[in-house]
Length: 431
Image (cartoon, rainbow, N blue to C red; front, top):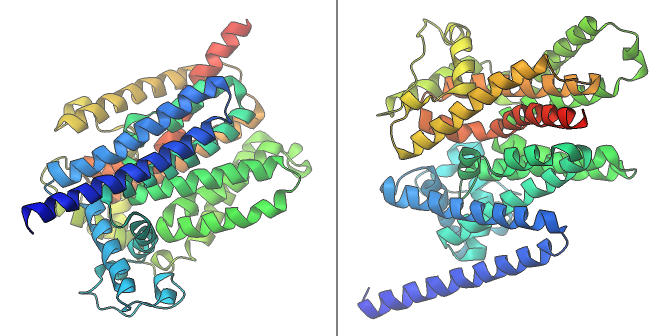
């Protein structure tokens, strides 16, 4: 490519990015005009931070990691799929998933892993929209995620108006969560689906036309199942049962609390097992084996930030022996002395603050007044986070990767500890 051609190419790239940024800015401006004055600053700040994080994440992988990593692989595979569609090697029906794709593994390797293939196919539509501009794609994905978070957050503040600050901080401004759910990553798409599903569930629960809202909820559940199956497997039974027990229907009112608690736990376990066996990972009986395989593979390719677990003779024993350490790691680590670079030092400082707030929340548990309904939601968040923290930590023995995967549950844990602080503050003000 000549110098003139190179200059024209980068000129066209910059023009394309500028057009998309202008479009995004106009859409954000139109949306924020509908907001209350006190919400506008929060919304604009959240969008700005999210977009910056999406661009910084791309820079991290293109520059710091030398052009390697998941995000660039997803981008490359999305580009290949779109190009095959353009030249007619992939039909419209194949591109949109109505027919099985007919490409070799060498031509399109993403098809070997169903979750990656689902994400890459969706990403290829964004590739077509942006004409393959990576950072423009990152900006759009970040925008989708923050918009979903905002819709969820606003619904949540209608239910809990006294805890707006806790909600805003937990779901919009936790640094590690904001960063690792931005840009061209599966986690960005996951939180988009998760928050939109949360938005529609809250809306369904409080609206008379609730049954029409089941359709988007089911579609989002299906997409989340295809992308990160373990999240809905854990979330759905806990969410449904927590909703049920928190409203206390007639058949539960006369049962003592310890029996309610027993029934609650048994139903969660039963529901989770029933739902999990709909997925091949569980129905094949290879769950513990795949946890161990993932653990060994990531550990083998980790040069720093390794997490050491106790070895065992079988995958099942490996899982059982390491449950306490995996839970502790997934919930509270890395500590400041376990940091290994600038990014991990920031994450470790954030995590240390969380540990302090978690301990403070335990103390407040015995001080503040908690309603019967609130008890069930506290339990629901703790169980959801506990299960995901244990499984994710055990299958991801690397602090760098773990910080990224924790975005599935850490916002809810942050909200829980900040809710305790907020509730204590409100009760003291009311006297």
